[in-house]
Image: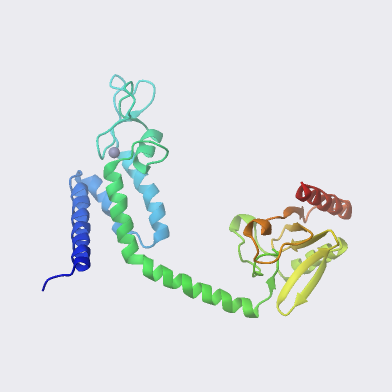
Length: 282
Ligand SMILES: [Zn+2]
C-alpha cells in the first residue's frame, strides 16, 4: 500500500530516530568495558528525580576514571587529565587535558561554555529518552492524582489565606524542610494570641482562616504556620483586583517576627509596617 505524504514523512522520522538511537548506543559500546558499564547504568534509574542525581553521579564516576597526566606531561601546577570518554582536553594551547576535577566536570556536564563532551551528550540523550518512555506517563498520572487529593483536602481541612492574590493553602503547603516544622495546635494558639496583641485579627469564613490587619492605607496578612516565626505581607491600598495583572499582584513587602523576640513587639511591628508602606510608595 502506498503511503500518503504525511505517513511517509512520519515513517521517515521514525526511521531516523531509530538510526540515531543505534548511533548513540554504538558510541557507548565503543567505550572501554568499565566505562561503558558506568554509562549504561541509566537503565537502573527508577524515577525522573533519581535521573537528575544520576547525571551528577555518573560525571563523578567518570572523573574518578581519568588517568592523571604526569608532572612533566601537564600536571605541573595542578592535576590534569584528558577526558576518559572522548580523549579531548582544554581548548587552551598552553594546557594539556582538563583540570581535575572542575575542568573535566564542566566538560562532562556542559556547564558554562566549556566544550561539551559528545560521548556524555549521547549518553544523557539516551538516558533521558529511556526515562521519559519509562516514567513520564506514570509520573504525570501520580501528579494528577496528588493534585486531586490536594483539592479534596482543601475543601475539608482548614486553609490559610496568606497571599491576597493566591488560593488559600493548607498548613504545610509550600513549606520546605529548611523552613522548619509547622506549628501544632497549641503553638498556633500561641501565635494567634501574639498576633492579637499586635492588632492582627484572626478571621474564619467557612474553612478559610486569615490573620488580617487592615486600615485605609494598607492591608496586611500574617502567616504563622512555620513554628519559630510569623511572616507578614503588606499590600498598599487601593488594592489591585484579584486576577488582574500578575505584576501588580506581586506588589507587597514582607517582614517577619521571630517567636523568640520579646521586647517592644508592638513598636517593632508598627515600624516594620511603616517601612513596608514607604517602600511600596516608591
Ligand atoms: Zn569528553
